[in-house]
Figure 1 (cartoon, helix red, strand yellow):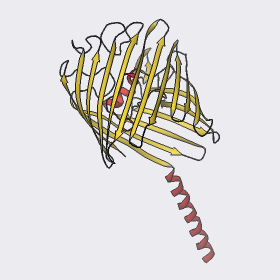
Figure 2 (figure 1 turned 180 degrees about the horizontal axis):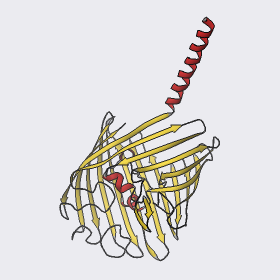
Figure 3 (figure 1 turned 120 degrees about the vertical axis):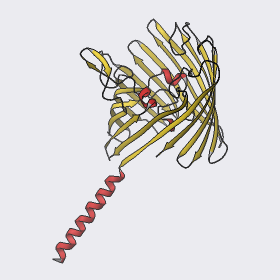
Figure 4 (figure 1 turned 90 degrees about the horizontal axis):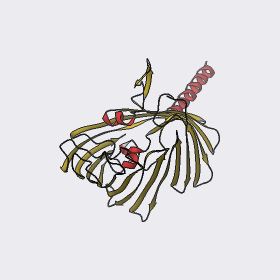
Length: 337
């Protein structure tokens, strides 16, 4: 009887330990964000910069972001769900076809949904819907220094659905190759064409390329620690299509850490439309340009970040309800968990 009891206790202990180890592989994280935005000069009460997110006047909502993930020894998944105005803007490409018409799809709360397989220590295959590999900024406010977003981010792709392969070529060198649905077609392929992407990384600097239905985008994203307290981020991109409007631009992100709880940074961006009116700036005039400077602070209280922001957008034409410039004040709160 003692042997039986001992065996049962040992088996129970092993089962509990196995369950505990398995639970450690499952993660649930995310964020919530909200903000106030008001115009100082230019436009009308509800006029906003031409970039994505943080565009509502007064006290406004961002989104709730819930990310569930499981990491096994060889395989895993990520399910990234968003809900709220920022989330709705981020997944605008989610559509399904009903009676020959494209309508909002079932995945309007899905930001990312993919599974991956670690084929070896240096090769990982990922299939599903994942955020874009182009650009300096991302959809989640927790990973951006500025709360409002740049024109380069807003008019590059947001997400892709497809298959990608990541290769670790060395300690500081990587390569990614991907075949995907047309850009931002997150639920299904609407026309039978495919986009192709590539990324080459070296020591934290990335050269990105996307070809999609006769158009291509070349993008550089990187950053440099100039000192223990001074970081400089860089983003530059060029987009061109077959006899269609395009754009190019560049942005610098100098950031200074003044204490354990406070950082201050600037985003200085030039965005230029080419070969006609791309529609990003909203002037109605071909080949418009805009120069946007955004001064941002990050004050951290535990898991809460308070983000005050001053932004000035200056366009070549009247882009802001009859005005060429628009100055804005924003105060955001982002809580991550």
